[in-house]
Image 1 (cartoon, rainbow, N blue to C red):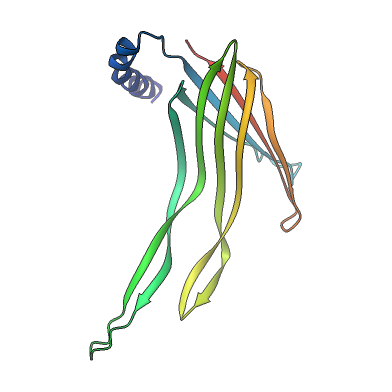
Image 2 (image 1 turned 45 degrees about the horizontal axis):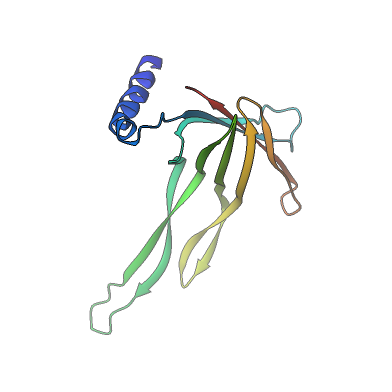
Length: 175
């Protein structure tokens, strides 16, 4: 499994080599590690860690989760046909991370957004159709940090759910 991941990473980097040759500048590769620590239950191991590689000056996108349908419209024809046409929007539910890294001397400047969402057990009834209720925590951020040094981006105390969440990021220069 590890060899397959390394092969996939090498294939992705090989695709960028023509860009590197054209620009004349050495492209910097960074490892981004994001740790979500849920401090609500101190006895449970509730940390979630995600890591991925990001190329300098390029948008990196990391998504894990599912797409959930939500009804956005319904049309009932005026003709004798009783079939209604229903329109859906599919929402990305789970962990969605986007970031953009730029070298800033010996440090790395990072702009990004985090979106953590899940479907609650409840559903809202709208015109006879059950739509999901989605709980969401969203963070847009800008940070400058030393390579390999963890930085706390946010500490969130949600009064509605009594949830405590700490978001930490570590950016490490790979090459």
